Amino acid sequence: MHWPMNESAIRNLIRSASAGLATVTEAPQLEAELLLAHCLNKPRSYLYTWPERVPDTNQCQRFQQQVQARQQGWPVAYLLGEREFMGLRLQVTPATLIPRPETELLVEQALLHLPVQAPARVLELGTGSGAIALAMAHVRPDLQITATDISGDALNMAQHNARQLGISTVNFLASDWFSALPAGMPFALIVANPPYIAAADPHLEQGDLRFEPQMALVSGADGLDAIRTIVQQAGRYLTPGGWLLFEHGFDQGPACCKLLQQAGYQAVDCLRDMAGLDRISLGQHFPLRQALQSAG
Ligand code: GLN
Image 1 (cartoon, rainbow, N blue to C red):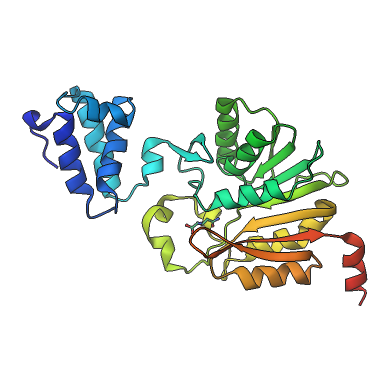
Image 2 (cartoon, helix red, strand yellow):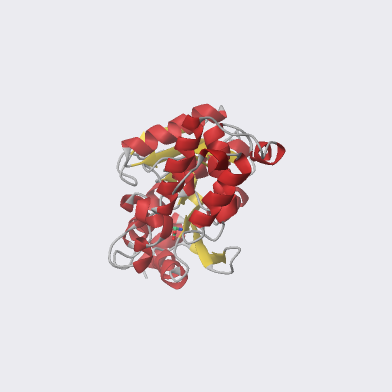
């Protein structure tokens, strides 16, 4: 892209960048504005207040680099280094999945399925940026939350986000699903947004997914490997009457409900996201009933 000096007023920078981004995104103007505001270290409103101002050469160069990276497909969240989730500003890097709006449903439902009396123990598996655990801790500071991830880089990111938000009630733990969790300290609720995309899914070659950690996205031939592990093992870590809730793909609702039923969960249900797609499955753990059921 060419940037003649006399074209470097904020208004013109936005105009040429959004023309350059039109082929890669449905929101070229918005993205150009977000990237420019970020490079100037100013709120977006600054761009409208001072459209004739000319940013300095470094800022222009940085903006040009960011627009080019976006044209190559880099996710806006990684370029900005942050994403908002349930009103919390989270730092995100390519070490973690970018929090999605549909995952807010998982947080809302987790909060609704918690006992009201404190202090409930909650486990989040595969926390990534920490989005789910931190959003829950923000709403319910009385909860004792353990958040795990297999990736040390992700845990560092999540811990950084906790510090930035002043949240100290989440205990972060390196763990391959349940592997590092002590037995005998059951949780009232276990929540996860695990990887659930099938290894050969063509979506992996599109959009933001190309740049996100595969470990956080892909889970075996049918996408259900992680969910199978979680459903099979969660019962050992739940209190009687405790809930397991997890996110999954739009076409995995029936399979997930079946897995939960086969594992003896009660009150199994599948909930839809704002787009009307199956997105969350949940079930309640009753060890005695589960034992009776498996004894026939
Ligand atoms: N919801 C993400 C997507 O389909 C996938 C996230 C995940 O695998 N947990 O883009």
